[in-house]
Amino acid sequence: MTPLPAPAELIYAVGMAAVAVNAASAVLETENKRMDLVGAVVVGLATSLGGGTLRDLLLDRPVFWLVDVAYLVCGLLAVGFTFVLARRVRLRPGLFVVPDAIGLALFTVVGCQVGIAAGVHWLSVSLLAVITGVVGGMLRDILVNEVPLVMRPGTLYATASWLGALTLLGGLHFGLGDAAAAAVGAAVVLGLRLAAIRYQLSLPTYKSR
Figure 1 (cartoon, helix red, strand yellow):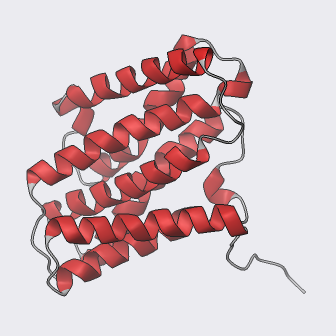
Figure 2 (figure 1 turned 90 degrees about the vertical axis):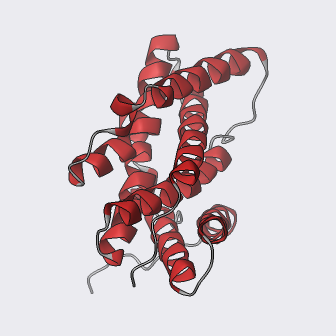
């Protein structure tokens, strides 16, 4: 399976959206942690930039937000806007899980696109997509002293990301355009993640007899 690289414009647009959504979701999760603006910035940037940073280090390529500071500015603006909004508007508990699911879908797509452009094997591309999607959320949960979502039962977090990545790659292999394959892959991630939240879907857990 050797799909063509996705256009740079698509990678850039989806990546910027993913940074903004993940930064906002991170701030929403800190609501009950009584963090100040500096704490929210740290958590928000770790969430929105962490997965892509590890991906770029593994690919031995320049870290995306160091090359283009617009990603960093986007994350800071999303954190600031969400922080101010949350102080003025009463938000219902657990609101962060929906934008978090959207961010997971977007970052999975970005990870796939970057991996494809780097020319690595399709299986490695799918794992890079998962890394891009879940590492930021893991850092967020660790920083706010929570068990990472990816390790909680009934979440289908990394699983949703991986299946979405494989769907995207499969779509490219069978002739879908870049945008269409990205949309289908993101839809699979988002659909599985929201279904897991709604119906407490989970994989079998390890239990010795």
